Length: 418
Image 1 (cartoon, rainbow, N blue to C red):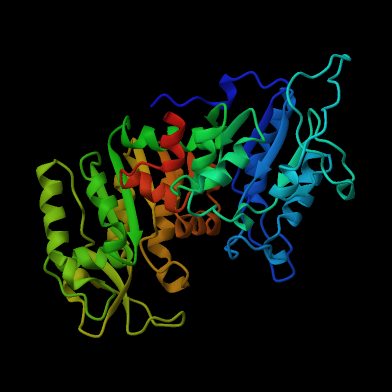
Image 2 (image 1 turned 180 degrees about the vertical axis):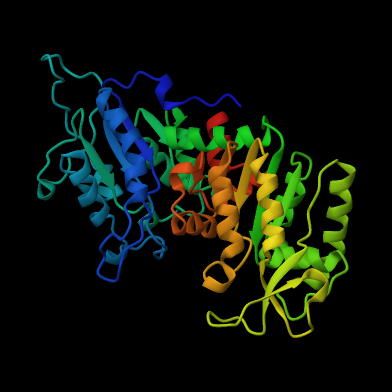
């Protein structure tokens, strides 16, 4: 791809519109409970400011009804936190206010008249006057704009009219073709990738296209059906494909073992068998657990019992890999050159069934390999065991991360290439 990047451009006296992912969690009172995504966006914003740009930010928050303002989903709390972090007031304005008739822009430092058309006048109630160089405004939730979800060209043109440069920096939304992620790039004078998006693409490309071997992928989850495309896409590039959770149960059944009352997909057992055979043909392997941790019920207080995989009873539920299996997987990870991790190997939320995921998490952290981790449950395990600083790259992309692993093209990335 021939994507341009923010750092390749001269930003002085430019209006830079940045699509960030500021979709932060909040409590019932609207207080931000984690500002990690805001913190992650800061370097991009500060870089543009330091290089003489005027910055317009946009993001979504939650799932409001499109086209309608809902105070519950307003970006006002995000603007307040940005104001604290940036040391300047960051007003929130609607797209209607932002695209209102403009006033001449004030002279730039040095007294010379600014030749670039001005941004719209921010209403006096915002008490900030016009946007100037080194200043930031935040557009209200993009999902309040009718046409956002269906990538409406008219809306995209409105957004593009605000800027000289559009920066796509929200990897987590890059798999959606929407006006603020895809359409705006079609009409902006220049469209580039921001540092966050650039880092995501480079990290995943390093794993899938130029990995140090052995490459070991860990794919966990409840259903093979939800990760089937990922498994198929990874097989040609991995040396070992470790499966966990309900996915592992389906592969255990495919290997000819009973799984009792465990969560698995009987209709995908033939598919799992084919994947095991295909891995062998490619010189790779999908190891099957030799022992498992079972219980009679799926409950936090259920009594755990370690059993060999060939001894699972009809009323057993497999909830974790056993210690022998965990030790074997740890040895594989110790010798890895690259590790890709998406999903835990057991029900780690329950203490009695967390040991397998804990051992693998710590093995990944201790490995000398280049490690990339992504997915909600994966991030929860990283946080639980305190190893974030020992993972080479942690993706917060969610669905976009999975789609890249599936080999899909992301609309918010492809449009930058075009």
